[in-house]
Image (cartoon, helix red, strand yellow):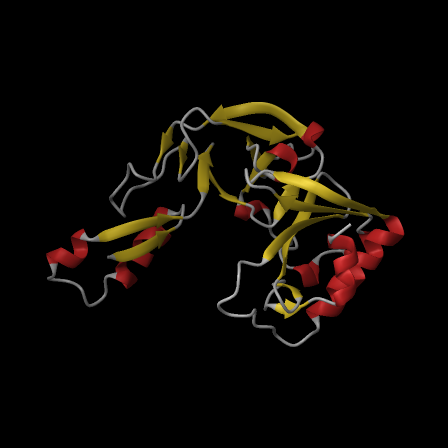
Length: 242
């Protein structure tokens, strides 16, 4: 089966499909055996919002009124790569899911949907065209402004449970450990072992949306992937196991 990952933009989706099927023309079996792997998005008010996997809501009181709801889910229902998304369409969200604006973002550059398994209780979706200049990578975030670090571990029900909260000097010391690791040589987790422990950290540098990262621990080391996978200083364990 040939899997094609399609974006919210129909023109880009068509371009990706054309590349994927290069060399397969004239073979109806190949063309009919295409599986669509949608980018996680929702379309509203003529704008396509994509899931913000590296962001988390740090203040649920910032949730504003509902501005609309999902009308149609593409996953499992749309099988044509040429489909053009419409307002109310979503790749994976169920019909009836309410879309909320953030009070701090009156331009509606970010929308939120209720999600009990997300930190802050809401999953965030952003309009990429409104995020120009917004830091997406750890090296670009305002580290000197981080005054709060939340550390979570996920339980058997996949719901996040906060296990540590660092403020001010402790938050700065934790960020310093992350900075030290970012300059390290690459790290390869031990193959064939048990699944590593996973921790989620949210760095708050003001505002109501924090920077979210996953940290891991295997039999040898703590590590994470701010860009490449790199080891973390051993001292970080004192924050993750308290």
